[in-house]
Length: 115
Image (cartoon, rainbow, N blue to C red):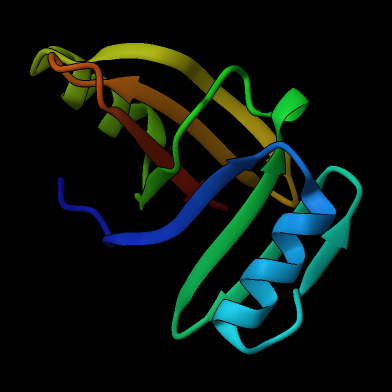
């Protein structure tokens, strides 16, 4: 089963307001979503998200999310190939479901399905 590619990258940040200023300057557009728990930009077909530290589930580095048509099937496929589930499938709003796994070297890989 193929993926739709990496379309979402989430960045854990310690200061959401300061990060928003930097990413707005970098990307050249205002955020599409601007909440106290999440700031998100849509630029060039990609979604760049800023997540405050307390909301990241312990992530300390950006995570790229691979968009998939069937998150359960892809999760089963990658775990059968040797990945370990970090965060099981969960709904994050508006029909979007996410999960994360780690590869054998500890790299975190995100899976994302939009219904």
